[in-house]
Image 1: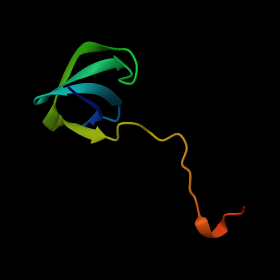
Image 2: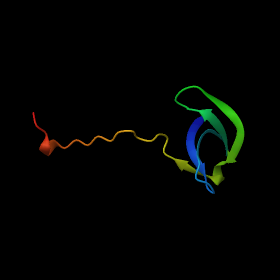
Image 3: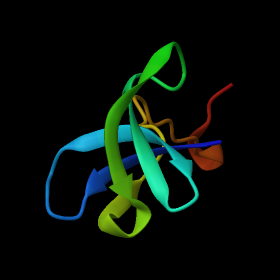
Amino acid sequence: MNFVRFSAKNGTDEYKGILEGDTVHQIYGSYLQAYSVTENTFLAEDIVYLPPVLPMTIVCLDAENAYI
C-alpha cells in the first residue's frame, strides 16, 4: 500500500490517496493519522504526483557565520 498526495491533471485541487496498481483511491483525512477511504478513484495516468508533505519551516545553517 502506497500513500500518495496528488492533483488531477485537469484541476487544481489537491487530494491524498492510496495507490493500488493503476488506480488511486482517494482518502479523507490524513495518512499520518486516522483516515477513511472514499468512493472516488483516479487512474494513475490521470494524476500529477505531489510531494508527500509541505514543509512548515525551512532552516538554513551557515558554518562561516556561526557564533559560539
